[in-house]
Image (cartoon, rainbow, N blue to C red; front, side, top):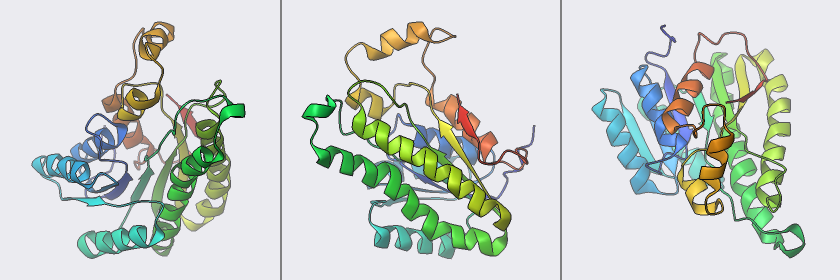
Length: 243
């Protein structure tokens, strides 16, 4: 199936990790014909991912960007428009988990850190890019949600719950202006975030609970995002997709 992504331009946050969703999404979109800008606080990783995209025959830029810094976000968007002349797709994949701790022992700075990246970082990206999309009456945005409600996960759960609420509002505001917003909840996977913050043996325990008896791979997430931002996906708006 042709997803209608040839020559589209995508900005993806969180492409620095070489085992993460961001890199897998970049490669999946590149294989469908997209040019890519990947941003991450890990600039070397973002450039490594960009190099792999270029090896597939597509244009790509990898930049060191702190998405909580609006000036850095604006500069990256300006560079993308100078290089590619347009931005069709935004995938707000970047996220962080400050660690699991019981709420009564939690330092509120942990919550602030999670909100800064998981919510406000995504908001910075949308405010910087959406006006361009609106001017063209075309754009596809996917915001990444995350698991919520587990014991000891107040910071991560709260920030991702806020992403869900914001995304619902954003979808309704932008759809009349030609911009489609949906939300994606990734399943447990062996990404850097998971490796850094999940308890020992968590992956093995969860694998046994999954219908297929294994964790999802980043490549499988990449394929789902490619569909969500494609023109083949022509009707789904403001939905919460759980893989």
